Length: 402
Ligand SMILES: O=P(O)(O)O[C@H]1O[C@H](CO)[C@@H](O)[C@H]1O
Ligand SMILES: [Mn+2]
Ligand SMILES: [Mn+2]
Image 1 (cartoon, helix red, strand yellow):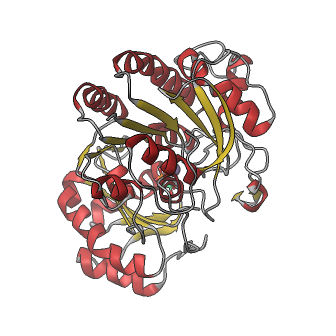
Image 2: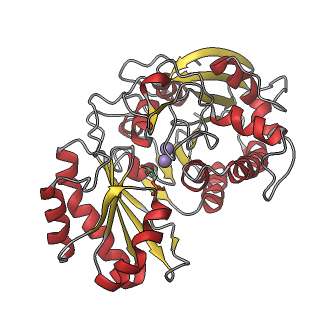
């Protein structure tokens, strides 16, 4: 028996999606978006110098095949990622009609999303009246603030003071199929915000709005800050996925980060949460202690939430370099039969226009699976491969590349 560590670097895309022209940031198509390539190019050009400097330094990921995966996905060579890999790598293409986190994760777990998500219009108000009324009922307020498309930092800067004055929750959406509610952890109350989002979720899910997301924040006007107590209330996958396959076989399934939320806890025994730095500690602990046959499924969200959406190239490069250094320590702790598979769920090119995700292929980088290029695969093939490694029967259309 052996263990599988499936690690999603949220939004670390590698370009080349064949359907990128059908996805947009505002009115600009995602054609040519390439998160990793463009960060590497900005670093090489000396344009990503805040808190770091010089060419992008990712020796561990590159040794697993990252530079080659970018070339395979997009036909472009990323500067300074030129290693001859000792790991095994592929480039994965998504088919679901969404470039969001649940679509990417469900498909990686073997289930392409079988419906079209509902997106809320970029108008003010953005929400249908009955949803707004339901939020008011649940929150016990006369109204809501926002009711628009926004990014989450701007929305609390704009409405935070009014929120403190009126007690009304700040409600907003984005190009994703989400309804997000921001509220002050102390003034409004964290538990109250979580309950509001949880109780609102069924109404949204019925309409194929994928997630209601609680976005708690703290601080004063001018210095509001979001906390790590974010919670996503997502539609449950409509069919069993990798986590269920493994759990049904009697093997342990451990989630790290927002994996529990993304799968609405389906097939997951326990979840460990926190900042990405804390998640790295949880992952290291699982490498040391997880039982034979376990699936450890981790999501590192800060590439996306802190840097991709904020179009912060230096910050994204710093996060990648931090992750790479930590990864080198993890690799030394793996046991001989372990599989570590690193991938991503979509792109979020910080050099691109807008503030939304970008449609891209993603890397598949493996330690414990030999050496060499696999070629192009589908997201669903990741689930089939992890299942095969764990000796569990895969369902659905994926084919193992191991
Ligand atoms: O701008 P913030 O609040 O970070 O929102 C981002 O996070 C949401 C969920 O991942 C996305 O839909 C995007 O809008
Ligand atoms: Mn994501
Ligand atoms: Mn995101």
